[in-house]
Length: 134
Image 1 (spheres, helix red, strand yellow):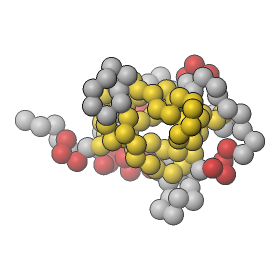
Image 2: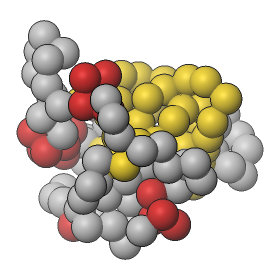
Image 3: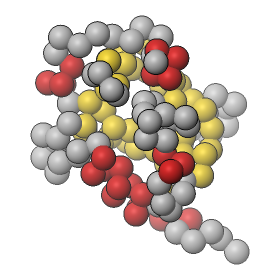
Image 4: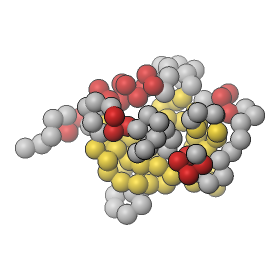
């Protein structure tokens, strides 16, 4: 028997406060997400004070985790990340293929990329690892 909502679940790559042990640990949300793997993607991490913002691509790496989430949880994350339909919110929701650290097939993951205007004058977290930087 398939888990409820399995047919419509999606994956999300989290790199900041939503990571396990973070201020907004995604495991605290309901319905509870399923942790799939640790992963890294290309990007640059910026320090925004209490939380980070990532810009995708480039030579740097972002460290994070992949979770399987339901549409209900995705909607909660959109509110938390202040996603707007016209991409004017604090974060812009993207979808990228992410390969788990253990290998295996690349998964289409949602990722919340910081709006470019929010990183002006902000410091880069060179390690690409928010939890380590804290």
